[in-house]
View 1 (tube, rainbow, N blue to C red):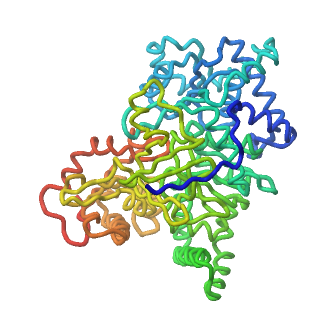
View 2: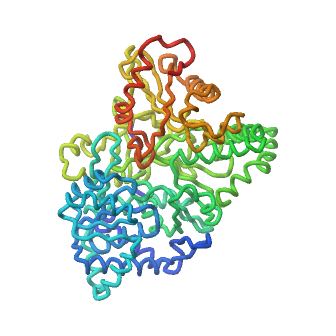
View 3: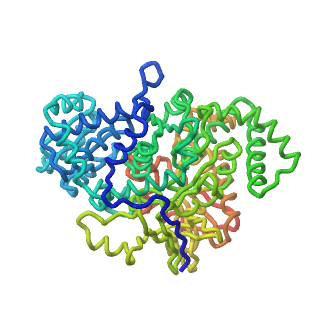
Length: 610
């Protein structure tokens, strides 16, 4: 077995819990700005560390006065905003445990998370969230309290807690030790019914303390580190970064509406970002299509090719003079405008949940933005490996973090042990036992290491397609490059036990009118009409041909079907982090899949559209 491990850089403290991270931060920098809240005029209003701490204590007192006991579970259904982290820490200071519920969850999902966890109270954000909870409230007899943020219920809680003493909060916040449960996060359910992951206080504390040292150039920026969170805090990725930011003193803003992301980036001017690859693809595609609409598409593509060549040469150690000059020209013409659009200060971007692809990695690197790809799961409190500012390889997900070990089983499965690995699945000893080999958590993902210990993800064990001819195919290797095309929304590669590989493809509804307009087609064309439009089909074919060039003939896509619908979280086909729920898609579109395997055999060399 191949194994790589990085020793701890901060000694473990088994007595510490998450509240210590905030207490230590207040002691270190009480007057530094820890959060910025959006104002009505598009600006940002500062919240100091001491102000945040005082608000946390006041809300914790409110929870205590409302009858919350140490160890009680509180559900939280709320989009990414300041109050999310405020509630998170107040719950810990009250000695309780937060159970996040995705703000996009259906009533059935809300019922499962709250009933399985045994939650006795729930905090929702909006009337819509309340409606979804209220529909299943009769099935949740344990729920005693319901609070709604938009109705001002947090202020009411604070007012109700005025008589609770500081000593009582201090007593409660010290009850939990490192091995105790800090939160119960339900997996996104891309492979069946969501399981509750018991993450401990040590998972957050030790990982935050060690990751802050490993990522010091990102979170301890001498000019003041800052980040604008826009991916959902209910997901472990953003939740961990929120906790790490409190520990490291990073200034945090929030913008849950991705349509408002660019204006918010321009005014907030973050030093680093947290995103999934789809966001980086979108920024690139929108920029390319904008250039195309302004008659500068050719210049943009030449600039992009130059950026990739420049970054690749730089990584190899030497950039030819001609390339340097060419890059300088495009930097002034194209790249500087993109940097400004992202706020002008972004130096780093942490990316996770799916592979970004070397081309985009090199493109952003040339903009002066180092994308640090990482790898992890809910069960590993987010990161297990991550590229570091001083130790980075584009196309990999980096080396192990301090306190973490990763090994590859004989079949290539990635297994993890260390400070970040969860304790167990809630009330599910069978699933827990099945997921561990001794101390090693079996991720179900496949990977490979290079000689320097950099991990590359090659696929998911359960998703490997075995064709009728016995060929093993990892879908991601084909899906990721095709999805980078501006026209493409989602790609689902199929072909298990079939004679050849095919794909279901959806169009990106947001980009479709722009692309149609730029290509001399009717921009008002419906999604349904676009799926049979010759120009659209030819463009999708081009994306497939390019992906096919990277694999063997037996692994290449021979047929594809364009679906006249979108795969979304709301339709039940994507997880909250925008990963495809493969098993559900295969079931829902089984008729379209079978149609690709009936009738004419696959033709040589190119796809046939049905």
